[in-house]
Image (cartoon, rainbow, N blue to C red):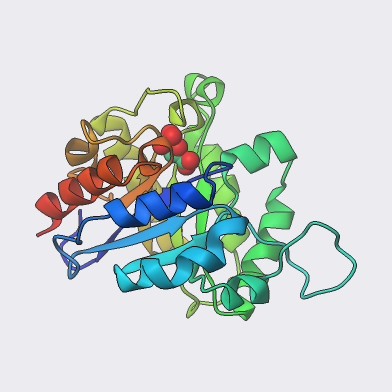
Length: 249
Ligand code: PEP
């Protein structure tokens, strides 16, 4: 983890969580052991954003959403616009998650529109990028990541951004990238971001859990984690925060 950057541990609940789960989670959240070094964020489903907003903020946890649409308002049945997310208390929005790219068919062009709309309304995007196993084995990982990062070409320099490198083959599979892979790929991502004039925090994501968090967070170029499955329970999520704090402080 780089010294001066405040790292981010962000929990992505995906399509999980009912009202009772959110109450249990909040009741079991422990205090952030190192708030000056580690920021905590949670991305529950849209249905829980507003009801969790106040309680999370009282516990020092920043709220985020898992997706947004790029239009401001109107006849877009089923979509949620940036202003609605702001209204519900969100600061972050995840964009380009591999599940949305592969299952919903989201394109880089749509992600670029969502980036612009998010920035216009004061949201901080967490832009997800990552290669499939096939792409890694074919040796095209860096090419693919550069293509996904190209959505940042010409992006305003002053708008907030976090990037999450998430190898698709490590998401929800229990497999994680080796520290060597993580260091090498994060170095490439930082280099590419610098070239695009948008160097920012880069999180690692893909089966991060309490057992591997410390080793992954200690990797050079890693400034936090995007956590799926292990963020559903407050205890395992807080163990990851504590692992990050032990490396960062
Ligand atoms: C994710 O949802 O971005 C993710 C990394 O999931 P998991 O931690 O479950 O692999």
